[in-house]
Length: 306
Image 1: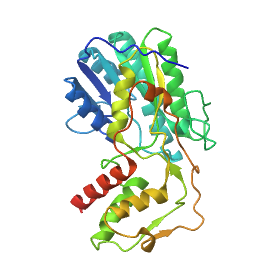
Image 2 (image 1 turned 90 degrees about the vertical axis):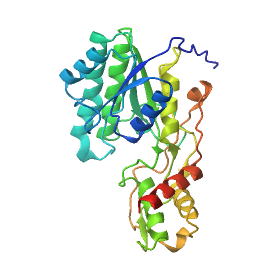
Image 3 (image 1 turned 180 degrees about the vertical axis):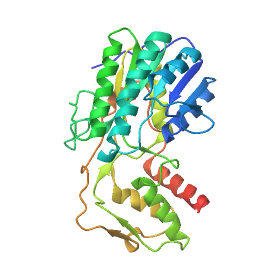
């Protein structure tokens, strides 16, 4: 099917980013500022507008006062663990209600980006696209699914609401609890003699390793057109954890097989998670940084920090 994309003609001058403190928010703010967009970052850290996205009052006040052209909802806990269900429900599902109602009341001309996730779909190992069914596989996925239906409801009220289903994206800003950063930091530590071994679970698990800055660029691409309102955002290229490990240790000229040990009996959340990003590719976006380049970047940053 051929899609005709109507690119937004007028210049959008102000953006509000809820969840600006995460890696994607950081790069998104950077890219928008390069486009001469005034960015109002909302988070829980000093230097940002301080507001809890799960509370309507502060959210409405920010939207009312700023009257932005664009609003991005990125706020969430960076984990799918069951124990984070209340925080994620309040930030993701509750935050979506609050942001969209605030936009409806105070800035109805704004374009709003709502974050979706690759983990909210039925995953049978095949590439996932916008037509793949949702699956309530964990509390995090349930919150994401609820958020999308809220977005669709507000779209029926003639608001400009976009949903980008983000697949795995990484950067040197990733928290140290994520496997991408665990491996990158271990490669740097082992190369410098500060660590001897690295223990990991199932190395055969395959997923995407897209640079978070590229992902942020895709979000901007999506919100700057009028034809499509929901799109999968990913590279469409899956690599195993073993391949990521090999790339990270190659960056420091080490053979990973001599220092990596696997944890017996480890059960992974899924064997493979990969997108079919044909729709966003048709809009002209493609990732710039390759997986090996990203591995080298993250290990290099880890070496600087160690």
